Image 1 (cartoon, rainbow, N blue to C red):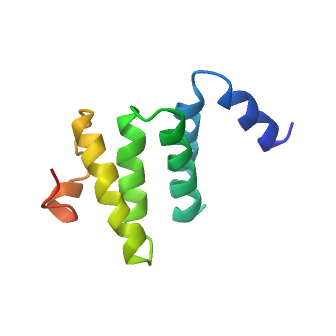
Image 2 (image 1 turned 135 degrees about the horizontal axis):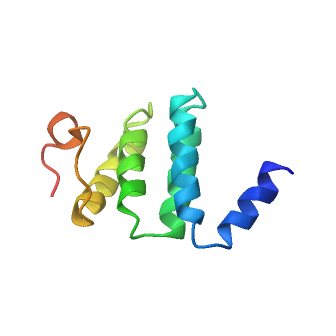
Length: 101
């Protein structure tokens, strides 16, 4: 079965956002690249805008973009994650977003 078929099936279920979150994390760990993880975290957030862990992961992933405008988008996702009650386990606030709300 092709990955696109699997993902299409996942999207129709309630676990789609979780699946994309996991795929994004695995992309980072296995050297799949931060761009790929950004796309997957973005998809998770689109599927479930209240999924704080996906916002937090996206904030982290966006930090590694070479483009300052892309990096700046990470702050919005970091702030959303904090509002949703995600614990700042990687100290993103202290290291990258000291003035975040």
